[in-house]
Length: 81
Image (cartoon, rainbow, N blue to C red; front, side, top):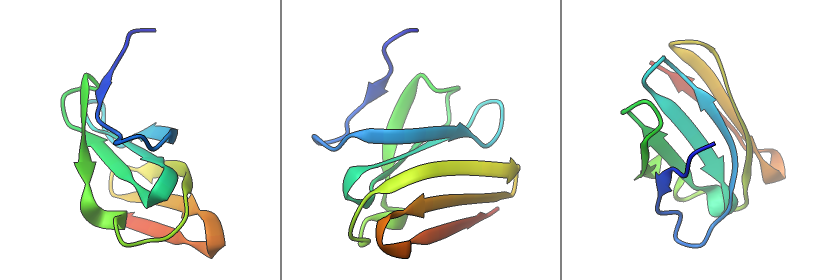
């Protein structure tokens, strides 16, 4: 393992998944989402879930254009590329 640059602002990262060989997504506490477009070397905040209360526990991609993030309080986000 190698340390990865991610500025989570104090929120924990709970799960991560690859969408493509060079793009990865991570979800965490406080409904935060992060995306890496450089093969997982660095992650940047993504505001797509910023207004959601609770945590995002699982990120899963079933294909390059179809994915989900599951969170607390019944939150289910769908990625459609």
